[in-house]
View (spheres, rainbow, N blue to C red):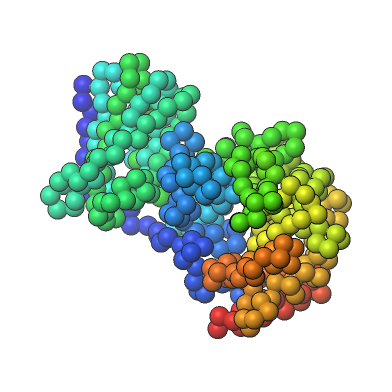
Length: 434
């Protein structure tokens, strides 16, 4: 049996965010009057397209989350990237909601009745600006993409996506799959994709839905939160990273193995806070508490500048007496603490936040470039490890400004002196790019 349907005229002309990553960051995205809310958009992540970063190999076929090539060419699931993936799609949903462009369009092509793929295959053609969602039950199936031109529907190339594992919901966005998996193909957003779903004996699917990008944003948010909830170490609260690393060319400075990143913990907490704002589920609250546990209860993510000032390390070394003191990683972790404390106020969190503020008050002057006027530094390894000065790239300089702007706004109503501290460095760093 051949189930076939053609949706040649289906094109979702909705608001679409062009690729904008750390390497394509513009001054237009600096929010000078940005109002941060732990339940709404996360910084300017609505303008990020994590899937299209150079270090993303593809969207994982089992979990529907990005696979990173950072430090491991064959790929691994990197908690920072997964949290950012969820935050970007959440922020896009929030942004579209404010712009009244958050409608979810569903075009159901298959009724809930189960279809066994050993006796049939599902075959249809849709616009590339669509998302595909379905549930498969057992055994392995294959999702076969064939790109087609708008005018003559000539097949250009094919790509097979294997789907394995336990029964689950599958969520794919056509543009991302095609752009990542078919890198050598000249492809336009108005082109079409021919899709076939076929499988092994007893393989079956149901609830197949063709939707728009908003539906994909929603499902991508849930894919990221689902992975974080299912892969958190319940004892330590960490999302451990099992990639062995030395610091640059300093072979004597090793990251812990496995290592736990304060930035990953903070951004995951920020994402789970937003999930909790939707569900009010106590299990999600417990996951938030576990996420921030490594930031306050031990030195697994911490280092001490001059053996005194506590710092939340994106890349924690084996010894807490040595540190890289990466600026953006600590600031992201701090925002995660603030988000968690907003929905689950705890005295020990408030105390740690105050300690980090004291550290920033003392340490921010060291992040001003000694030779380039008002430019920022990425870390303080030139002080702690006698390395060359590690200047922030242009994109990371803008990240520093955005994070400091956010913190300035957060503390404006509660602690004016702290807000002024951040404002001083916002103004200083901004002057370097104007």
